[in-house]
Length: 71
Image 1 (spheres, rainbow, N blue to C red):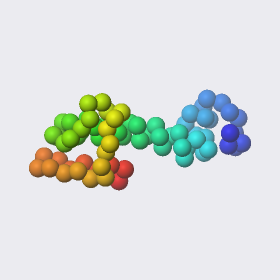
Image 2 (image 1 turned 90 degrees about the horizontal axis):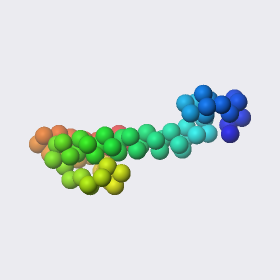
Image 3 (image 1 turned 90 degrees about the vertical axis):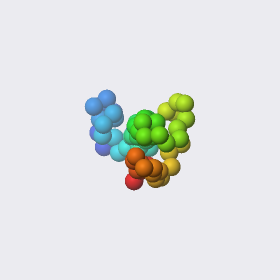
């Protein structure tokens, strides 16, 4: 893919520069969505029924907490 190393699992999964910009960011954002959804529910913010349907706003705040998204 990136032609910088052999296409081994140990290179592709954690290191490949080609994938870092797309796949790793997507994986990170999915985890971040689940965490944000969980915290939103815990602190009384509007949240969807399922974490994968959650649409995080850049900043939400109430008297209990302030949550940031992709900050």
